[in-house]
Amino acid sequence: MSARGAEPSERVLSLDLPAIDAALPLQGLPYGSVTELQVRGTSGAATSFALCACRAAQQQAASASSAGTGGAVSPWCAFIDPAATLYAPGVARLGVDLDHLLVVRPELEAVGRAAIRIVEANLASVLVIDLSGVELSLDEHVWERNVRRLALAVKSAATSILLLTRSEQFQTLPLPTSMRLEFTRRSSESFELRVAKERTGRISPPRSLPYSIFDLAAARVEPLPAVSARVVSAHAAPALAAVRRVS
Image (tube, rainbow, N blue to C red; front, top):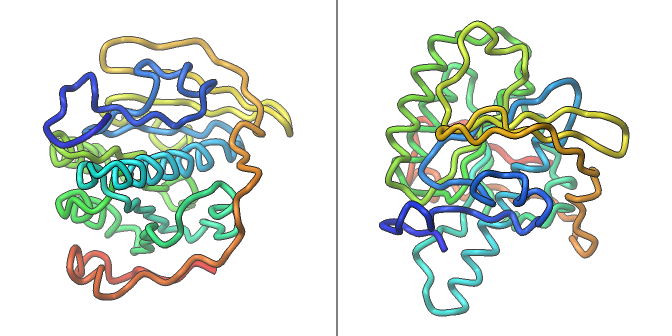
């Protein structure tokens, strides 16, 4: 269970992937916090992990709605994609409900503001911020402040923030996230997942997992629909002006 006002022990999003949930300290992702997904090398596992978190949150919201307890968890997820690397057929293949995925493509300097606005609007159960595809140098001090602001804004919200980075981006000033998961490609068929940082000290050695763990055999491939301008303007218009269709 996860909802606004729930006990801290209940504020966890299970990915419904037993091998991955078992590798995480809380057997899922904490709501109300910022988790860094750090890519080491060329692994695409971090993006798949983030999208599976979106799928799990959407399924949880659908289950709650069917049970008549909807409202605790938003069916919406948001993906901030400044490098425009999100691939719509791949998103669909992982089973994400494309009708409830907000894709935002702001200029790099506006990413932090867009993220804060989405959190403050209580719009999404999962907010993904993908910096891993950004080739320009990132100001570590700016992003330290951004993460602290996001952590404060999301603390009491039913939202889990996932920040995708590359290992070489924040070497001198590690980000103040509550947890850092490291993803390392080992072969074309497997990757390693390591809990490198956790606020209570529950770190773990690398665990080898197959890429096939993310597959959803029955997923439909379909184009990602454009986001309604009305939805954007109602929740976060100024910073979300760069919302575009992914195709």
